[in-house]
Structure formats: C-alpha cells, structure tokens
Length: 178
Image 1: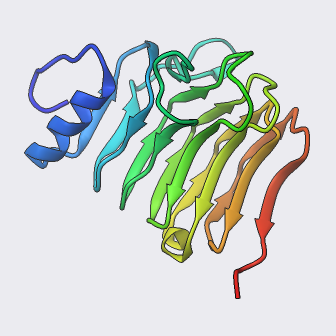
Image 2: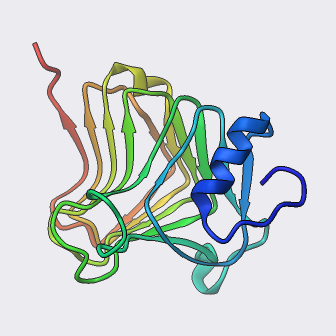
C-alpha cells in the first residue's frame, strides 16, 4: 500500500494504491477472506520470499461464500498484475467459482497458485474478450480445478504453468463468436 499505511483487508489498499498512483499493494503472509476487484495499473504482490512448504505462497486470498458477492474471487482490470499469491476456493465453496476473471482487459498473473479445492465447476482463470489477448499467465500452478484456464475470444498467453488434479480441461479454448 502507499507509504506506510497498513490495511486489514485488500480492497481498501487497492483503492488507495490506485488513487495515489503508487500502483503496488504488498500482501503480508496470512489468509484474506474476501473477493477483490483490481484497478487499472495496480500490482498485487505477496511478500518477497513469502513461500511456505512446497513453495506455496504465504499470502492466501480465499473465497468465502458467506461474504463474497457473486462467484468470482478476483476480477482483473486493465494492466493489473497479481503475483506470488495463492487463490483458493475452500472445499464446499459451491459450483461455478472463478478464481481469476480477466474481462476483456490485458492483465497478468505470475507465480500464482490457483487451488479449486476440488469443487465442481471451479475455474482457475476465465479470460474473455479480445482485450485480454495482451495478458499472460506465467509460472503458475493450477490444482484441483474443473478447468485450469478457460479462454473465450481471447489470445491470452499461457507459458510455463503446472496443472495437477484437473477434472475436465487444463486449458479450454472456446471457439470465437461469429
């Protein structure tokens, strides 16, 4: 967050970083139970060296059905970035949760762990629209999901990722609408 301000939740820190033009929010180790909306040109990063057992990021953003509106955990904005974070849908989160939605904007995710908790229909990344074609998913891990990455009308770049425990498709590319 800008300056030395400390926030208990992520969204106010994102808003402050966007308003100040600072553009970066650093997450300390911990579990954050909230859905968030990234803002343009804001980078959300887990703390450096923040890796636990098996190289899992120590900053965890977790879907909480009781407090999260809708079924999307993180929604990207133009030129937003998320790095060194674990996005998680805990067991019992429900059907159809999307951990990262990239809605027709260029956004990036690097060294992110997408953990679907084995929930039916959970998608790690949903990229939609030609605007997301300048985005990328790199060096990330996709665990226990129905679909790792679903791309609809998008040329999203996907490189050096690991997929494990995927029920349906690691990468699903939907045909362009005509």
